[in-house]
Image (cartoon, rainbow over all chains, first blue to last red; front, side, top):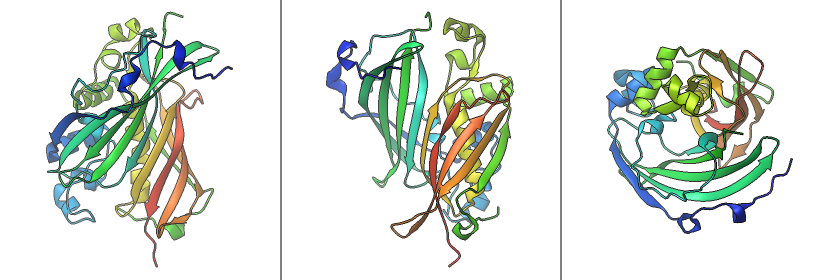
Length: 157
Length: 141
């Protein structure tokens, strides 16, 4: 299997790589935390029972680690517009968690494209786009970073 | 909830399985709170993407894997890193086992770290999701 980084053959806007832009500010509510927790079948009272959570180590209802998936990022983030393939799938995700997100927090998200590259294997050529989203709370603390790798493929092959 | 401590853990310790078999209704409910559309909510849209029917989103699968770890680590534990790749799709109706294996327990910056391999396995024995995670656990003393 050849795994060359054939970025020179991909048509995309290279100028957007590394450019960090605001993609939204969100007030996190207890209701949203509970709705997400229930949707994934959670039973942890830290995520479901505000009274119990306030008595716990974090002093508040906290969100499950990947609650940020409920925050709809605003369009207009960096778009390299890699012209390849017919559809995108998630190739991978790496998150780092620094502080819990609490009910009542105001979370600001910024986004940047960190890499675009191609690989060729048994199933053909795939183009990978890696985007980092950084989430900060109202105190300016980074609560979480998410590096999401999307792969574009031609599903007609 | 019970609390596990770093003294209770050693390399080779197995965690799980947390078994999930999301129904179509549960898939759609998750999509509603996460604002997902397309191939995750519509068979027609899924066919347009070259699939047979709706698939379970990566976000939902990741949430299940994270739940395995947060259930295990207890209220005083902290998930600090979660690094996963996807090797296949999760289809509507799949039975999923989320599992983890402790590989190391280093002390780093005065924190007791537990390093884990994590994976999700379906009823066909395939692993559509696998990766690593790090959790900080409290110590008894």
